[in-house]
Length: 356
Image 1: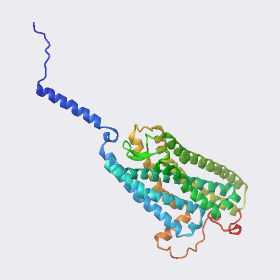
Image 2 (image 1 turned 90 degrees about the vertical axis):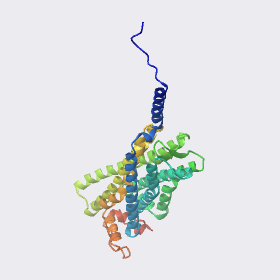
Image 3 (image 1 turned 90 degrees about the horizontal axis):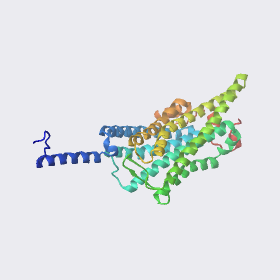
Image 4 (image 1 turned 135 degrees about the vertical axis):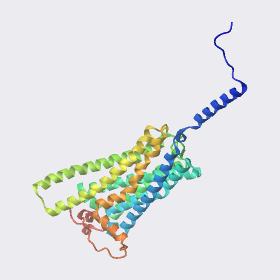
């Protein structure tokens, strides 16, 4: 008696077709790993955005450097620190971003491994330099408002030059040790298209670098600006009781300059915090897209800093105006409008600095 159900055996041709189909699906799923699972338009947009930010960031920061060195701002402590920030941002936008755009375009690193390590070292070094300079700016603003006598001492040339050198030298230590093979290592992470910390090396270098180069400076800057905020509130209470107009004007201008520095720090904090959080939480790179897009916030802030200077500081506006109108070869005889800026100038002796 014949069963109602028949098992139909596939022919040789059908069997080979089915096997080839399953094999094709298996290979497709195996090849879809990390960035290869995402549409190519994402990386095309990332490439274009990186190139645009590189051009505008480099141009704006070069303009800031020229505006400072060709005006009276070059004798001002805060302006010199901003000039150092702009130099670091110019190097970042001129070297880091173009290579990163090339990586997005090719979806991989097409250059040598040594250049990849240098790229990662330079990138992390410049981020550390930015944090150190922002910490120094906050420290000098703190001294200027809270301890003016100490500010007079530490704005003298030997102390100030030593502070600037330290801002560039200290982060360099954490970047040179991987290159010479002493501590830590850098390599290309294909899942996130970045030359960064190696996942195979010891985590102590990564943890120490992030802690010393980002967490500690952030806490220090927050403490400085929090103390400045308390002084601002106290000053307003005293102003309500009535005080001398000249002293209040100096304090108001000092707080305005402090506000500009605080805005620069907040912008840098907003731009870099997601990058460091993602690298700390997802250290195994399970989610590539947050790693790829989080640095764009920092790159935008590198390009926006010159805009902040222009909007919030009259002296920078005048310096940009002289530069763009090719008036840099004429003597800058205009007196600085800010009393706080004059009090923050580099000094050669006691009598060059006005009393607080």
